[in-house]
Image 1: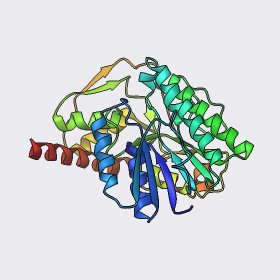
Image 2: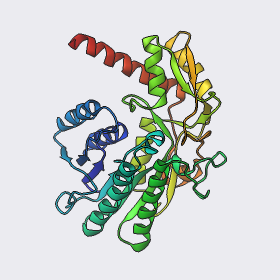
Image 3: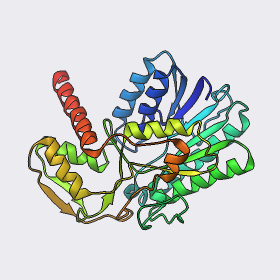
Image 4: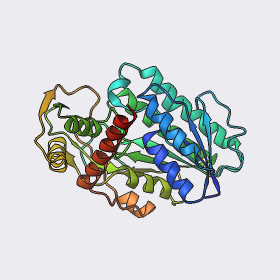
Length: 320
């Protein structure tokens, strides 16, 4: 990989963490973010401000679906495309926003990459949601069957990437992220809601019975896999990225109780549409092609996220 790269969604949970790693490695990074209304923009602005203090970082605010890439991709060799609108539940009500942010944005970015002679590879952050309700563990050669508009848009963006590879326009690698968590996790995601409620002494709202399972992947492990995908021999391929371990939500809550050091109060709610019952990554391809091995277990990761939330609360109190 050359000295300059682009990270889309650079103010996001995973995007900011990846950007910081690239900067720490001495690379120049151009970050692009639209600061959409998908969740609290204040967290995104705070991350963007933190990144802009680094001399190797340049920020662009813009909508990928409409912006021009003729200038910003000049001299760039690798694009990490992490921008997009996430969340299965909301996609049923806001499908046009998902099509715009996930499909139209990816199509335009790929067109920009095709026209930029320096761009060698685009790494696309897809989602395990493309699998839908397939039997676990999920393998990349399983037939995708998304059950939400969100999953459909991520799958369509994958198809655009693979088509670009087949045409020889630009190398692409599709990473199917499973459930990513850790410090700075999106506020709408289950583990952050669970931890915050536990720290506040509030009841935890659990959608479904708790028997549904997820493959929880710590953010630094995900960043490591994403970085490796920039140089791996994986052009045109989808690759699962997770922890490779299936944990029920009930078991995750038991671990959280141990981490917090207290009893949790759980209130069950009806399971919403679009949520798969189980998600579990087969990591054979990630191990073989990326040399990827997750290192952070769920207990350690929950403790790190809880520590971050505690520190955030303490800082807010100091500033109040």
